Image 1 (cartoon, rainbow, N blue to C red):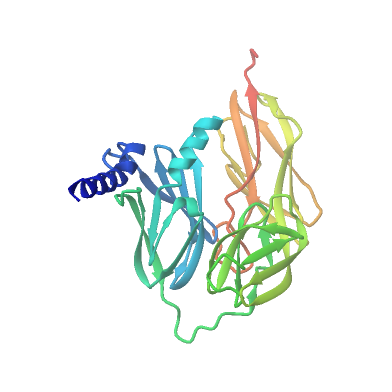
Image 2 (spheres, rainbow, N blue to C red; image 1 turned 180 degrees about the horizontal axis):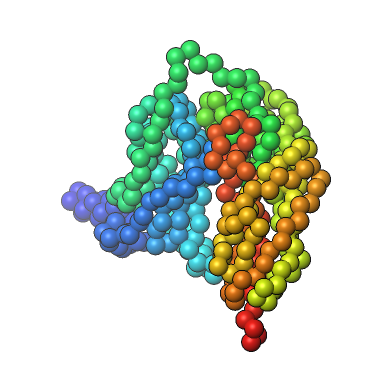
Length: 331
């Protein structure tokens, strides 16, 4: 009896030590992990930077109480194939803790129920040790709140996040789907009132929109607009000028495009470092760009309304860009 008992105890001990044999320092070493967040319009993304790469958790910029699902992405640090695969495997074994949920990064989706107030979102390792945390402000639903059947912005920007409010959603990713222009568009976050996707960069113009949810299916249309920027020449001499061409592709009305000169000491725009250009639908606006002194330059263009909270616009962080240089007289 004592031999059998000892044998069983040994196996139990080996089972307990097996994770430590696979990762001898995972639960003991000091892991340097940092957390920060970025925002693109209605989408907020939490970044957990680890030694193996980054874990991304997609949320609403304005979180509200109730059932929520958000995509989790693991981005390995290395681009080398085998090292990347190894890092991806290690990233998959971290855990996201939020609301009432604890889920492995490898699951790919955080599904949780949030209550109003400041909530924590943390990253832990497979030993349960907290490595990094961030706070999420969760707003209560207004008394008597009734979700609209379907609310779609009149226009949005290609390549940018788009929020769609609908009574179709139940806060779970399975069964929630969005297609734009006949193409399936990944849903990054969904609650019981809305879903967020990212508009394909190749889309412009008035495109059909189809929304699927646990409670049904609805269709609409949306105007997708993209600011474009072109330059006749990207190499100038001091005092020499060239034309830059500005347009708003896919628009059916006048758009305001904001130009930003990122090297005002190297080149000059007609109205300074930052200027707004009104562009009619189908029109290309030409502006003069002049070289001032030698160096590299860059000019970006994006649709106006980047900071707007209007239902008719979506915040943009993506910009069209031209880059070049002004040559020295000796070049």
